[in-house]
Image (cartoon, rainbow, N blue to C red; front, side, top):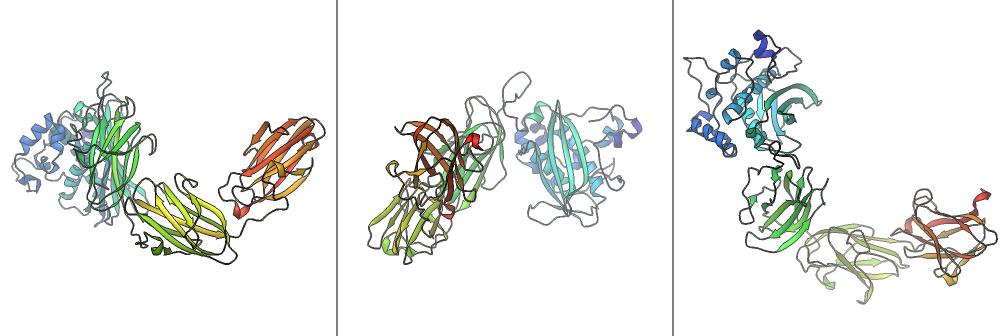
Length: 584
């Protein structure tokens, strides 16, 4: 914004946006800037017809004007900047596209000054202009105007790079910031070799309704002071029959949810794989996914807070070439701005197929992880493993996003173990002792979903059995004296140790179950001789150790000790102790 405190003679330079250079700035004429009587050079932009009419129409419909940036007026046709120099105290205006073009030229001139000081042949990449990490029509306009001006600058010694993966020496990055009634536009030139800031500029323009229409709105913010409403975005009107097409892997679409609004998106992948749909921003969104196009009524899944900060996130195994429709709304009556992204992970190739039957079982090595997938809704995967003579403790489980079921068979085809949800989330997990021989493992998906998973297997030495076994029932509880200690083990994750305690004197006692390497998660429960509950503890001690401190009357009590670990075999030892508190 022009400052009225600047002397008139220096207003054209000092009152322009701030510039930071390592070298003195050099005055550079604007590209295609002409004086009366000169013939301006012809650019590709000037070959487009009806520029003036397009600009005028854009003032009434800004979003229509920004749909075709190649129809924007060329730099040579913009109002002469000599008029601005003659009236340096004139306030910036941004009520029409033509006025926005004028303000844009102020920043372009400063950027050209800075780039003119770069080493010859420097490669400059243009990045995005964002507001609150969201893209917007104004950001696309600003970047494309800057790209057009820099690439057509006469006698330029730098190269303009638009490809995101191409090698470059510097990057130009932009950021919009709302400051009261003003929108400040920052542009930074960063040297990539050491990430140092080579130069920075800013420009202030008024936050007019025209500009506001080109920006994403903050969650719950009003489009106009006092209205309490959020304006419809540039993609409206959209509906299930007319959804917004989304490019998978593209930049986030900046959208708004106004009162009673629902936003619809159409997504289609050419290959099978995991479709990842997610909203970004600060408003609480809710998303639903439907199969097919506009005429389909099948809701596949939905999500509220699967993403970060209250955002919705859906991961779904998409079929090749099949269209999907997503609906986004604010949770409750919430309105505001958000971003919508679509990503995709291809379906991995399952090298084990076909392994649909026991006769086709894939031979696997134990103590490994194996990548696999359910490529159809009814897919079944069979595996075959050899258990060495002497056996051991078998651990087999899946890892992934699906609801799996694992069944283990012996060599004759009889079921030995079966599990659905003992693992994390909805994954199956089996942990059990086995003898030597051949085992078959069958894995299925219970909801008919398709997608990738990992099968993990391990064979370990049987859990060490302590001298107090068998003490898995209260009837077989082994005695522990006051002040005593016992070294114990859990033979499996389901092992329970019962201990009998006789208290002769009234007092406060502390019972501890301390793991050998402070990594085992122990759990204590105390009951009286009538099996009435007294107290329990999980992590009252150090790390994951259980520790109970309670007042006890003379009598007989029972302590139940178990582990909360799914697989304690790697470190299954713990020390059980009881002592009067006043004796420590």
